[in-house]
Image (cartoon, rainbow, N blue to C red; front, side, top):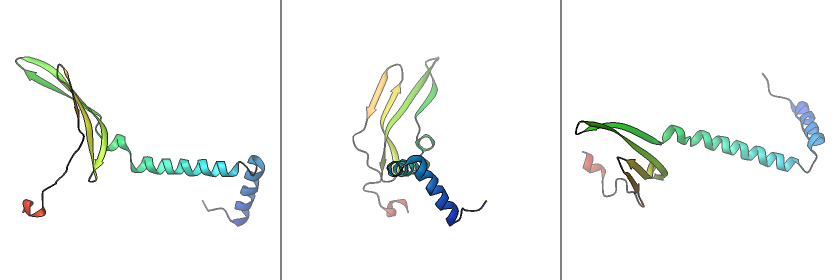
Length: 114
């Protein structure tokens, strides 16, 4: 399939002008630009693919089994790493862990790994 030529683009522009009027075209362009921006952001920041929402583990203790459910939320980027700042664990009671600050590799140098 080939790209439309100059004459074809001019005809398309005239049809759009007749259908929508001169006043609606900036609104349409703004909406189209916003849609393209949102689409690109969704491709680059697909949180469903890169963050864990919850996990369930079956634990055995004292001859009994129970399911531990952990929910992860309020993800923030710290030094390029997505970190959950809110973790809720249900282990017979609900334990709600909220972090206010996360430090990654502070005080660590390359020499520590040699």
